[in-house]
Image (tube, rainbow, N blue to C red):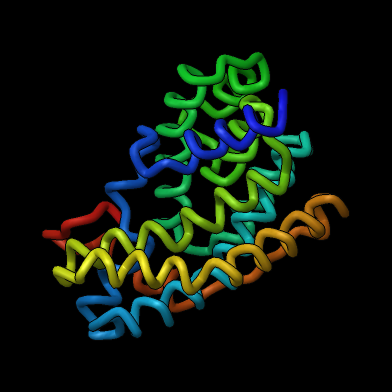
Length: 224
């Protein structure tokens, strides 16, 4: 695939309108808003930067490794080990299942078919994301960039709805985070090239705790 075609495929995959189900998830922003930890654009930027350098780094490493063709079973087990919250594990597999449906319709691939058969209830979303990138002709760097962008764009989009935040301000937050996104994607890709055992395992314990609390809410705007 040509470089220009690869970049176009990356735009399709990273587009918020790609039907992968991410619009229904806040990335932890909903409980953070209720707890008063996100009140404005400055708080949102702080939240997204922390998420980016922890769970974002981990997800990007998994996605890059999957794009390199590392074994899906080892990667899915690695994702499980890096996701202590049962609620977040369930969310990751639900999102992986939805992404798989969209990916197989968009970039038919024997590798995606095999992954879907191996995990009928869904593999972890970053693993599916990397496999999707591979099917689209993208490399590990592009897979990692897509993962880190999703890590921060989800909470930013959710904050617009949850706080009636000015969408211009939310987009400006993402723009200010661009250098951090590039750095995290590069670190994740370098680790993925070293093998599964070298993948990042950064975590954000507060996100795990609030995810469990959020899952028990009787009324909520977002699924996670």
